[in-house]
Length: 71
Image (cartoon, rainbow, N blue to C red; front, side, top):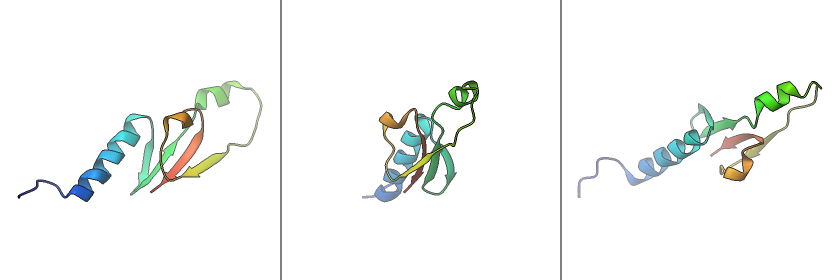
């Protein structure tokens, strides 16, 4: 059987497309950053530390978090 793309490569590409479609920014190979709500942080009027959570799998529940995905 002739495949147009290797199944492992396809799996990686689909994961990247999924991550980017929900707002994850590609930083490099298998590394993405998601900024929770930068406007909310800017409008708070107070300085506070920005916490970035490092994970291996993106999840929709992380929408309001600053997350670094390393695969």
